[in-house]
Amino acid sequence: MSKANHTDCSSAMLPVRDALDVISGKWKLIILISISSGNHRFREIERSIGKINSKVLAKELKDLEEHKLIKRTVYDESPVFVEYTTTPYATTLGKVIKELRDWGLNHRKEIIGK
Amino acid sequence: MSKANHTDCSSAMLPVRDALDVISGKWKLIILISISSGNHRFREIERSIGKINSKVLAKELKDLEEHKLIKRTVYDESPVFVEYTTTPYATTLGKVIKELRDWGLNHRKEIIGK
DNA sequence: GTAAGCAGTTACCTAAAAGTAAGCAAGAAA
DNA sequence: TTTCTTGCTTACTTTTAGGTAACTGCTTAC
Image (tube, rainbow over all chains, first blue to last red; front, top):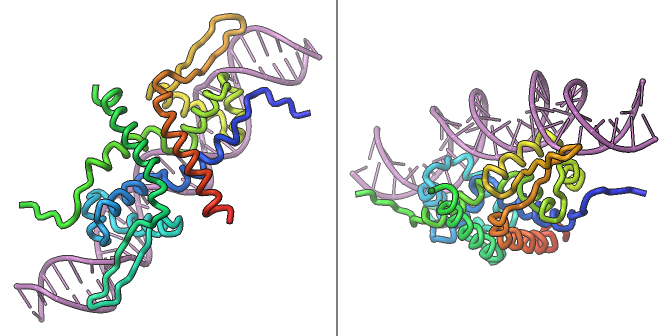
């Protein structure tokens, strides 16, 4: 008889954990925003973010690709060039990003910048 | 003349960063969910999460309090007891959490559990 | 022929996050 | 009276994220 003297809420926790596994971290959403704002080349993305370094960017891009959120395409022209684009699946993150933005904007007003 | 050969999107990035600073990490939202699901005592919260340890929980609770997302109240009865509750401000995170949940649920269906 | 841009990689380092295990003061229950 | 529960703290270790700097092969521009 497992007498669990607490409210169970694991069903609410699990999906949030899943989502955080994909998007949390310092750079993932930032990179997605950069790409969907029109930066498609490695160096473009790097410059648009500014403080990121190429090692971290390369790693994060790989992660995002594994999660099917971006697509890496190599154009075999001369010189070859590499393009990163967001996938249709990435657009499902739109609402998440919007809510985070709105909340972050308000939070800065309320707490940080007072 | 700073010739920035990339699209500028810093205004979209900043608020997202602010939000992530507060909510990213392994436990913050999980703890908020636990408290708002009815777990108000330290040990209750601990048990409801399961894998967290008291050192980490204590630290995260302090962080959440600093961010005005929860309130710690000490009731000076005998024995004294401590209660954690979410603040009205925490409810502004509701939409964020909802979107994360929905996305996480879908993500598990689409990517993880296939 | 030298410099500069592209898309990264490599080896190394640091700092922060998270975990482990134990303990403590108080009261309550056995 | 020993044990249990609560709400933590302390000291220590491990793990992970993130950062630095240099360097690669390739190509074009000067």
